[in-house]
Image (cartoon, rainbow, N blue to C red; front, side, top):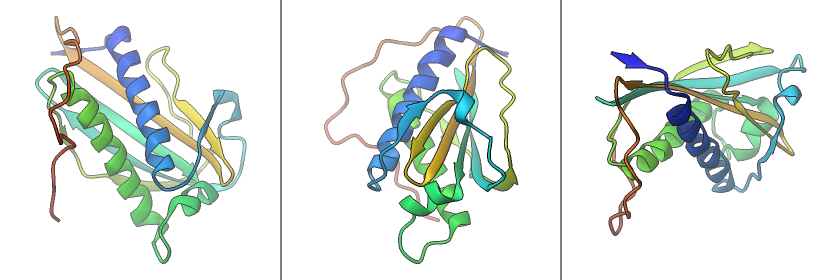
Length: 171
């Protein structure tokens, strides 16, 4: 049975927000964290991708949503927005996976589900709010909700193994 843990959810949310900023920086897009009040006030279509993750100790869902200008800014030349948001979500949750591995938690990932809509609004089930960022191309939101096995506490972070980065997956 899984339950919500505010403390562990906060740690995972911080890991995910940091991973999001680092991910976009890898594509030469600087994200600046802003308050949630700046989210969802536009009628511009948003693209988003949702991915799940699960282990014996932790399970959750991650949402990455971007205004189209923000996603285009990071997209490789000739890339399709639909494919790119899914790939960014995959890389984002992959970065979270590596951070959790640092706490000896191995998670499995689902494939991304891609959506488009206007004024997408997460409905958090806890007091934790999504992380909202701005960049020259628009707004980026990352939201993660996690539950943990009853009695679970986050192990201390271990020193990374030399060369450790994650799994290689072929599709």
